[in-house]
Picture 1 (cartoon, rainbow, N blue to C red):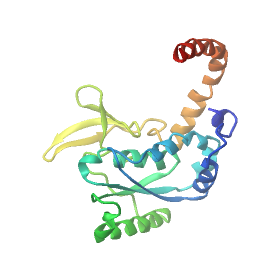
Picture 2 (picture 1 turned 45 degrees about the vertical axis):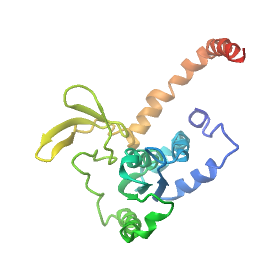
Picture 3 (picture 1 turned 60 degrees about the horizontal axis):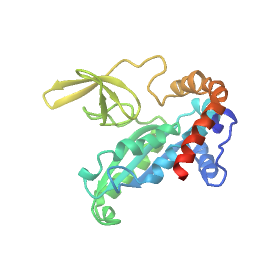
Length: 235
């Protein structure tokens, strides 16, 4: 939480600072990652988990147009059920709006490059990011079973036909139609979905920052509890 309370990350011995500098400079982003086991390589999650480092810059970024596209590569579709969802989480967490994505499948390393449709589609992603930044095009329309804010297809069931997108917390209903089920989102709340600038500001100011004093008041009690368990682990 040092990145929130002190304005800089407590971890100093890695390259996140250099990466964050590039992310803050770039209004357009394309991120690609391979899938090894059901979702993108672990390094993507490691960097996504550090996105609170963006907190001191939220106001600076709020007035900018920032868009991203993602490329998920895997051996086959069955091994990549969370590829799009977890890869799209990265740019969302760093303040981008995801406007398109590509899923490319082939079993061997680099084999996706032999399929010219993959190469052409990757080039088109770059063009679409550039055109979206200039306001020439809109985001790719979501499929009927996808969340319109993040292209997620993973939902948490919450009773009857109610569901919540696990990537951006958009709530809504799954409604039957001729093709199966269609996700119908609720009207956005006062702060929008989880990754909007408004919600990030609300989450930071109304939840994270106020938790500091409560934590400091209980820190000695927490340390005593940790000591008890550390002694058991060392036995």
